[in-house]
Length: 112
Image (cartoon, rainbow, N blue to C red):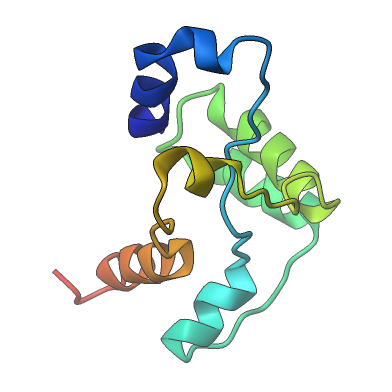
């Protein structure tokens, strides 16, 4: 994102009155689980919210925020993709699934 912002800021006239949809390919929890060869079990949004609220480590604002994001994702709000970011950068995007799976693998118990 920073590189895209720098490109636009570097030549504002060329990008005037242009709106970019800066997204990559969608990645789901199921995609990450499949990449890691682990089972994925979807839970209801109510259960997810209850788990978040029960997590004493989260600041008070986070459970409702995360539940709201999960609701949006579950209903397809973040499902779109666009070539805008790759075109602005003039290169292929980093593989988001590889990044997500690598991060999830690093967070597994015993991975550290």
